[in-house]
Image (cartoon, rainbow, N blue to C red; front, side, top):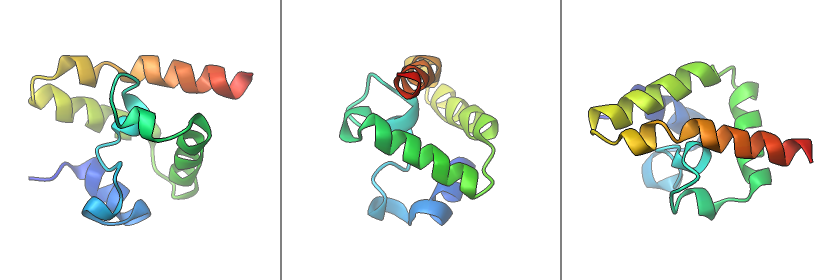
Length: 93
């Protein structure tokens, strides 16, 4: 069963494997291989595209956390704070 946030991301970025970052670990998990597949600027561009499509980042983050908590992956669920701090620090440089 697909998670609601993944379906919403598919509508913006493309379906299934055509968009390789649909789990959104590229934005919210700085300890993953997915994170390393995009530059900081690409992450910011993805976030901007979400804003342009009126996506609620807080809701996406909550859905992301829920997805990984359901899988008993607390490490992934709670990595988003570290990721967002890294992105903000990059943007402020």
